Image 1 (cartoon, rainbow, N blue to C red):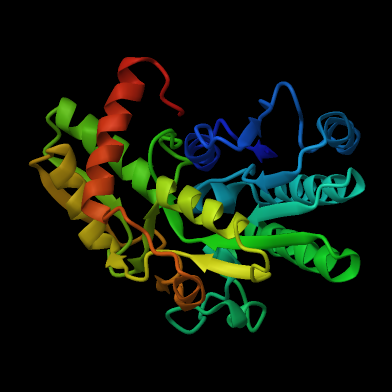
Image 2 (image 1 turned 90 degrees about the horizontal axis):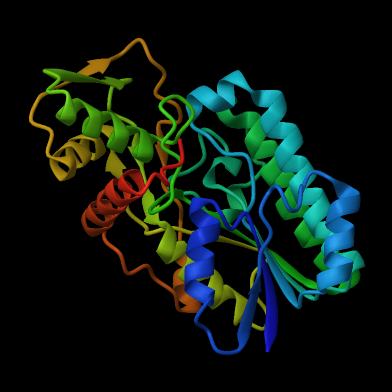
Length: 312
């Protein structure tokens, strides 16, 4: 029997992890809400670990947001994510947790990294300025996991997912990621019969998207490996342009109006496609296509809105 702590279980990734593990016979899932446990509080995190003594932990908690949020609140993104990483990793080690999986983000890689981005390109050149603070915190976390493993022999390792989407996402009109922002924008435009919807940038940047349930399945796969890589990318291995994504979301939502591109807004990184060779060779691949995942996510969005559970 494995006692597994999943941090950030109320978020999109954490809730997907809970769904993945809650019916596994030999796993007991332990969770805490932000009100019950402030992961930025070192003493509180240490006390939690000492009390619960989980066998393993997945660190999925974090302060997240899109280009606007990252650019506006860089100090908050750096401090909160750095505090969560250091407290959760060091606290786990001090409490005798032998297995830990730290979840990062593809934004850890350089802005002009080779495409697709292999794990080895980490720290080879400058980061994308709009989310540098968040990326630095995530890099520190994955390096902590790597060095605790190297120095202390604990199996602490990291997974770097690509852009994620799925049920229980954050649909805040300004501070959400591109996928939920688009779903909400087109849904509201459809309801109010707006003649046009404005999309940011040129539409040329290319992005890769992975359903949160696929990420959760990849995490379960990695936790079963006796000797996992220190760092492994988790993605689907293909990408779409933002323009293609916008048109796909509009179609799924059923919006029939015009799409106007505001080229005065930032595009962000030109392309972000992960090289998933390492994970594929280990034996894992995603199962949910972007089209099917979008349809599922929009259905979930409608249900969350209807039941007043929409995160925004």
